[in-house]
Length: 295
Image 1 (tube, one colour):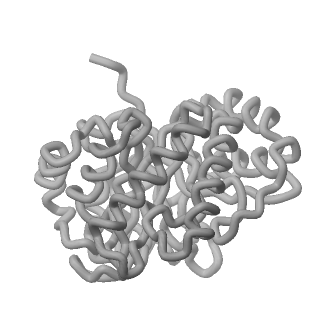
Image 2 (cartoon, helix red, strand yellow; image 1 turned 45 degrees about the vertical axis):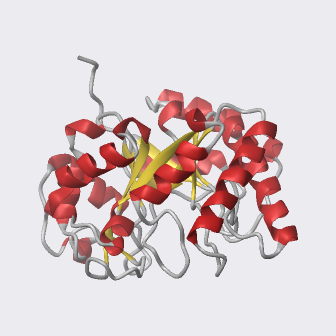
Image 3 (cartoon, rainbow, N blue to C red; image 1 turned 180 degrees about the horizontal axis):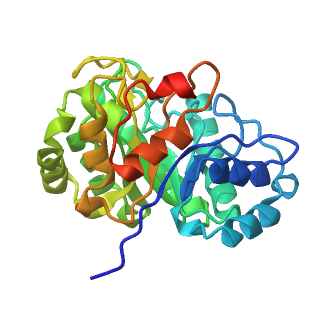
């Protein structure tokens, strides 16, 4: 039996002047054992040159504090849309920017990049899925990295694709590069799409049948502001939403997800990060009511 270690952390910022060193320090302050970051602003494609990002200093600090580089998670910017070809110029720009993100991800020493699959914007589900496969195949043929893309499970808002396991499976099974693709399970999104997280064992069994449990590369651990099936995608702090602490704690400690990084993307409360306390409670498997009052 392989040794089990909990890898849990949160989204952290990466901005000047400390860049990657600042990201590592933020994760350390939360007592995290992993973290997720964007290599630039998530809302646009502007990126600070890698030589300014203090990557080697950050890696050194990571190793000094016992982090495993292979468990770090990078998230691609939201503006990429692999599913929509109604505007060919934007489709080409999305592919170009995704190649750049893969190269940047590898430069930081990370091995996975989380990607929202995209929205078909009226083209229809089948066409949108085919566009995603086409785009990813082209990207993988050109990027020259070994970084895997973790397709994020989505809430099904608007014309989002990847909101159910069949769509995720279509993308992976039709790709020329299935070994480069995996999945990021998002608990808020799964709930908002219509699955009951209190029955997570059944969800995992369904995922294993449809996609294969070995494809899970990371998990986003978020409560939801809205009830099951709302398709809203609004994250809530652990224990304050419709999923609840017990169900999320079960996800975090599920034996079939051993050694897979778990990442919190819950909102700040009163302009304060909640991650240190949320990580502490999940590790202790003990919920403290009204915990946000003491942030």
